[in-house]
Image (cartoon, rainbow, N blue to C red; front, side, top):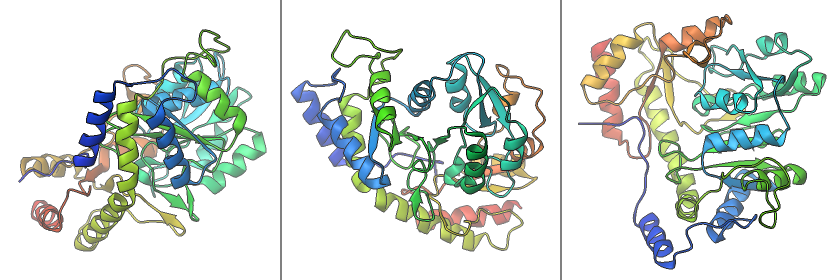
Length: 360
């Protein structure tokens, strides 16, 4: 028995629409509004998260990068981000010439610590990027208060939190912009892809140019942009996946609930939703000082448990920051994610729980 940590749930509908596009030959569009499927996908996203606008791009990294460029962040500026995240969050900032300033996290749900955030604000701070890690919602109320006090814009890194809500409002829609990923391991996929949501028309118009070499009508570059366009094949896959997303999320929630019930008497620290929080259960993440032993033995049994992230960004060879982030470093050594994606069956969940008890 092999149970991967995450696997895309695709089927006949995705194959059919890709075949149709290949036969038609319209694989992409350099028009500012994008191709037919890009536009259709953007409408479906806006409707799902309840935002005015959605801008499709070719990766979650591209979404973050475009958002940072849209705020005119440049060399000499600072952007506050957690270190306990995928490196794309930092790289998107660094690519503009700005400095990523690393903030510690809270032990409760592995998201940005508002107290540490406030301590690290300087005159150079031009944006805050909280990450909704594993689908857990960052402490947006407190982060918002701090941002307003210092008049700093917020970009939500919602790459892992599509479908997560707080007070019935979707992550990614609370502030200036929200950025999402459609990598194959995410709650829905485009193969590769990402998107940004915003309610600000000026930002939306700017983002459309940034994803298309700064052009509006072709060869009329008006600002610095890149080729961040989402191909039609990927947009079509994403459009089909968006229709399946509610079912995907429901299955993840059911699997998470069962796993929590079965592991309730273990000595693992289990994930718990906060009041008014609805998590998408992208990754079911536990913590234990025996993480490395547990991980090795689960993998040996065919259970695709994984550690996200054993090396926090500030400790990587490229960034090698001397910043002290005690909770981040604790999490890097203690957290473990378990499979609960839609292809995981009740039988699989019971096997995972049974195996954990045998190991511990």
